[in-house]
Figure 1 (cartoon, rainbow over the protein chains, first blue to last red):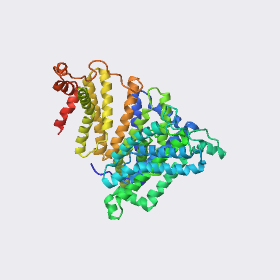
Figure 2 (figure 1 turned 90 degrees about the vertical axis):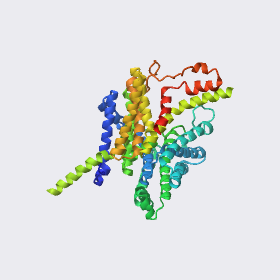
Figure 3 (figure 1 turned 120 degrees about the horizontal axis):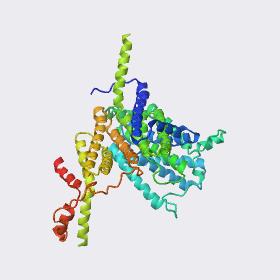
Figure 4 (figure 1 turned 45 degrees about the vertical axis):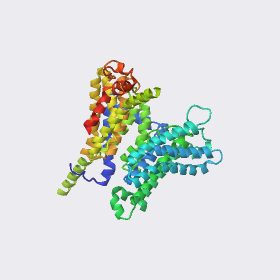
Length: 370
Length: 173
């Protein structure tokens, strides 16, 4: 097996993910056919369910908001050579921070004062949850994959305990807190646009989407245009070279994981403050794991992550439409497609890279021969 | 006496519940020794469980189910191997992908094939599942607490898979 060949940058960033995605979709189509539905009908329903109306598109972007946050979180850790599987737990605990701030301040402070505190809480709680696995990896060499997976379980148990025993609104059965006062609600984008005179149908899409875009811009600047980002990428590509260059890999790993956890915590803003307006069980809903697929598909670049997040948002929103309309398909089909996308874009990228590189080499060679 | 019986029953239950962990740990040991970190064990076991339950329900034969389960797990292992070894993909990513894919695939196929809301049918009929193997004189031995109860509960009365897993420990060493 020869080493994977080199591709031009545009092909590496643009062509390869598209080819991988098409392969994953082809495999998904085969499974849908096995299940006994027409892949073509399924695709049409999926697209209509995701983008067919303003409301549907709003839902798609609302899901995408979660995936942008978790995708960025995975990507930042990836650039430092760390595989953060714990975004689910970090987002869960980040949401706890948001919830505590909202519960504590909603009757006392106006919205514009609550928002920055809630943002700090989301980032702070998420980062805190990433800190212990990060410290164990950086200082003790414990495998970050194992520890972050474990911390997902711990976060889940912790949140269940808190919601069932401590934070539950007295006098009700379901483990939820009371609803926040409306001063702690993120305004929806349709409402904001309506104020500007642009009419858009109502959807849960809210201000967190704008914050997610800002976070993407921040990651772009941080990773590629600051000294810290340079250190981050150096440690990710070659820790030994980083030591030689005077960079301390453990410190950079810690910072990368804290940043990763903080970004994952942003999901809490979207779900808790933007949509649910209360703390409840399992609000991350697997978005932490989707973030892995999003980061892989987006080649760990903010622009790619945005596009991949919208794609997965469309899969989620269109997928629920699909399970309504086609009796032989349930929501789990979306999980299958997600797994296939991770497999094709993440693990099997060399499957297409090698032949593509050969193709480019031959094309370039024949060009020189003329 | 009560406590003694309780402890013996607890130990018997421990053996039963530890079996899947033991099998997974043995599986992890082999791949770990070859230098592959196998986070895909979860997905393989889930896929194998689905295949075994589905095939056993359809054919009515527990042996066909066992074969289907093993083959499914091996097929998933080949898929991970194809990604990680042949194409030098990231081992952790490949395994995560398989875990997620299988977690969705089981309910999806179950819904399409059995129409029971994403579950496989209950395995009730004789021959569809491994039954507890009762060793000779186990019922008589139960009457004497020591060592009869130990024999009846700890040695006797487990399914074939439990004994198989135990036998694999010295075989794998």
